[in-house]
Image: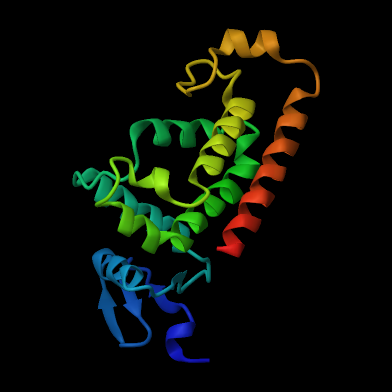
Amino acid sequence: MAATDKPLLIKRYASRRLYNTETSDYVTLEDIAGFIRTGREVQIIDLKTGDDLTRQYLLQIVAEHESKGENVLPVDVLTDLVRSYATGMQAVMPQFLASSFEMLRNNQSKLMENLTHFPNPMAAVPGFDALRKQQEAFLKSMMGGMPGWSGSGPAPEETRAADKPGDNADDIAEIKKQLAELQSKLSKL
């Protein structure tokens, strides 16, 4: 296995300094962000405890970019993410987000081509409409009854009146079916 196939191991010392084990020098968060932008996977380990700190540092990199005005995450998405920690969505959100980003990665060249040709470049990405419908159904079933949810679905009162016992399970089954169909279509592309 080539060295670039393995994650770049970064060790965090007690002083909180980050040490690149390949180049034997200290790195900053911006250096780590640069490695990731070039396609390199990183793993950040606490030297003393052996704990994997990768997630913590990746979130810190995202937060720093967002605070500098490099906004990628809309406020409503951030709000829904925060809400997901208090609902049953916490269990399914990682798979949902991973599938969405995988679709974007797989269709990145098509997306870039469409940036200049269409007013809404995402609409021309293969499978985008199916993904959008899947996301709406998912969010409706998981967040519809939550106070203050700003989704595009019906108001929470309308959702509660329309729901019958077992509807959420049916909605989740339908979402899983749609996701499987979308993944099948994407793999054929």
